[in-house]
Length: 226
Image (cartoon, rainbow, N blue to C red; front, side, top):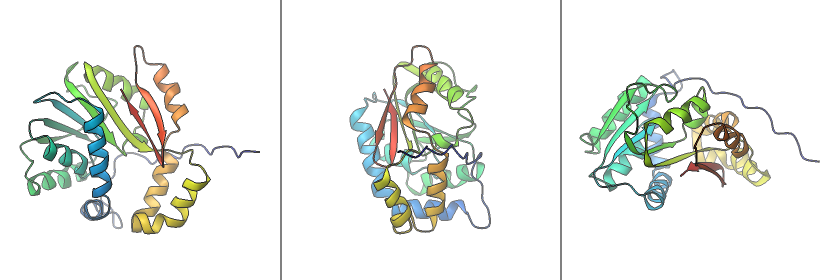
């Protein structure tokens, strides 16, 4: 008999600097241990989705900025706006863009996906996000806003954790988590606990008129894309 999936445990709002969670240290950890994975994710996004020349991109929840930086380095013609709910993260990400020489391509603004009033309709050619969805306070409102600011021909690519892990995936997280994520292992686990299942997201997207986005389950995570 299968065990019932535990309910979500929300992680709360924006990530801020604390005594044991410093944004600069987190950024350094990502650059040292996750950048190769991020490069694969960015390559996959750029292969699967058509971004027009001089396209305008929106990144939801860029954190320290490494995904957007990698996109900018591969596509020097595009402009990227990063919508970030943490002012501490914005400070770190901005510094990273200068150090990686893409500061003319990327601009960060403070705000939340559920209320993007500063952006006009049909503004962006692609909206992308990595490991941000489980932080959203209201995914339904967030998806509606994304649909509004995305051009009718625009592309969507969202990657996040997935709560309904199978036995093998749980084994990886619980046994090899420390090796894979180091000191960040506990935050990885809490992010998984706060994440959604593909079916939960499908049910949310069903309620949005004319939404044609699809949800895909994959190893240790999921994607939502056009």
